[in-house]
Image 1 (cartoon, rainbow, N blue to C red):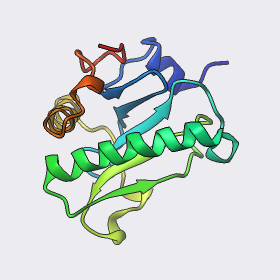
Image 2 (image 1 turned 30 degrees about the vertical axis):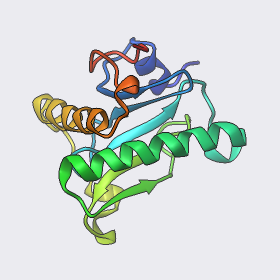
Image 3 (image 1 turned 45 degrees about the vertical axis):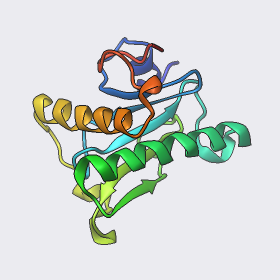
Image 4 (image 1 turned 180 degrees about the vertical axis):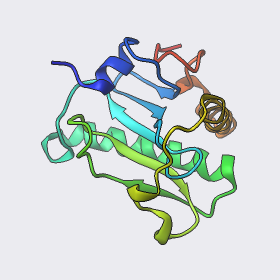
Length: 149
């Protein structure tokens, strides 16, 4: 059975994509801890990070670094945070988000029912920052599609 993330990647469920390559995508979470909160997800279903091949983990970390740099730039944040939990969906994913302090890095702070326009605007800021940082080849043409350019 496909995970919700696979269904987002395959276009069965809507998504807001900031990054796409042959191995991974990054899209906005619908319950962000802060504006710009992205999920870096492998295209292949891997249940948890400790099950992933080292090469895939290395690639995901590279993508998370690029997305983190974009989060810092887009939201004028002093840091980008990287969280790995994975209890809510059994498909490896890295949470990357702009951060101003450790106290706010709790999933209990995730906002529910964020208006779609706010999610769109935050994702577009990350997409724009990725382009400005030289990662434009990995920014999907359409925010709603993970297709490679």
